[in-house]
Image 1 (cartoon, rainbow, N blue to C red):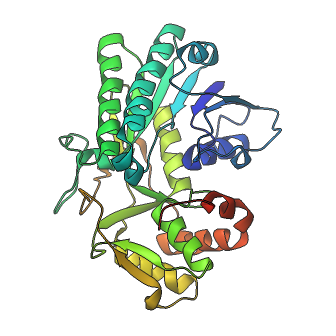
Image 2: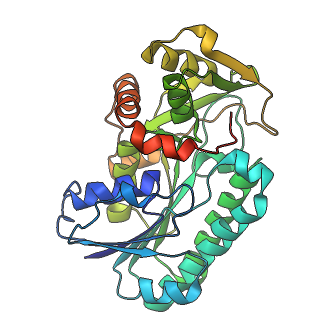
Length: 326
């Protein structure tokens, strides 16, 4: 079995790759893994085992169609994590998100079609739905993205479904809630808060901090993606939720407690433009059809994540040098 993982040096992709190489997915213990990653600021070669005999690393972009043809050829399956993913950066520089997330997805699917790849999973986000006041989105809910990032992911989802319907590409889409865990870039909320606190700096919270998000450990996300890879149906969308809705302000206070800091370390800042108020995913489909449920309790996973950042400043401190985020 040969698996191509795009964006495999990033936070979620590298966790998926490490787990596969460690034999964490039954039936894939001997799989050969090729990682394609451009190594932007969010990709880190150190996230992957340097000399694993079943790992091939290729530095390059999903926008490089010639490279894609050579990398995709001979692969049995492709898991597509590669994406620009930070909402704040998309507000400032949307063009890069459209290029990578939309054009890059189309280029990858075209290469998969030409090479006859048997299976593709396109990894997406709950943000494509916009904001929901109450209840939860199902996989049939209309797409209504509000940020340039979310719009680019919604477009990439539609491209993936078009390649299934037009060309018969065996592709499934996953849409996940907010992730957390080790190796997450400190631009994201939890590692930003934790690393700031460990440096004695305040935690920035947008607006009133009452935006509600679900939080899922990266290991539970990757297990679900792999379950979809193996058992998911072509042309289908699967939600990967957590069932743990938490207001941002509540989470900031909990992180302060875990870092031994007080509420005075919470700083409210000007709200993000077009900030979505609440996300919520209905997980019925993936639970009943594929038998997936998250296993890591939020409190345990959160505490372990804080400890990882406490124990690994050599990993995250260089990433914050010259960082303009608060």
